[in-house]
Amino acid sequence: MSMETLEATVKLPCSFLTATKLKENELDEFIRRSLAAELYREGKLSLGKAAELAGARNKWEMLMILNEKGIPIDYTAKDAEKDLKTLRFKAIHRGPHGSRL
Image 1 (cartoon, rainbow, N blue to C red):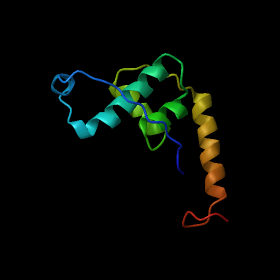
Image 2: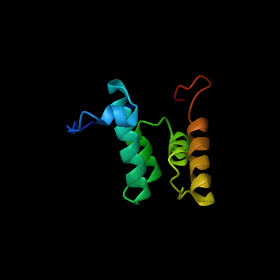
Image 3: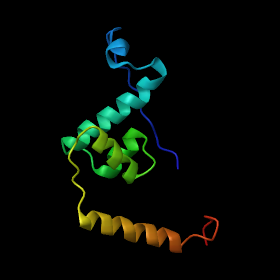
Image 4: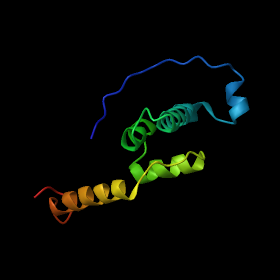
């Protein structure tokens, strides 16, 4: 599944890499995950959209990112039930090796 992307340029002070102890090749992931977590915290992105922006493989990985950043999770039992139904539906409609029936 390919996601359409938008490219943005962000100017950062040269000291940013030193201050954050990041390598230049880690910037893209760091910025996307930080932005996704903050927009989720502000209620501007759903968990699923935050996961998409962060490049997380799924909502569960996004939950771990939020937990690492100390962001309270607004994920209810009803949300989990809905996700479980979706997973079951997908499992039923796929063949034994992930192919569609």
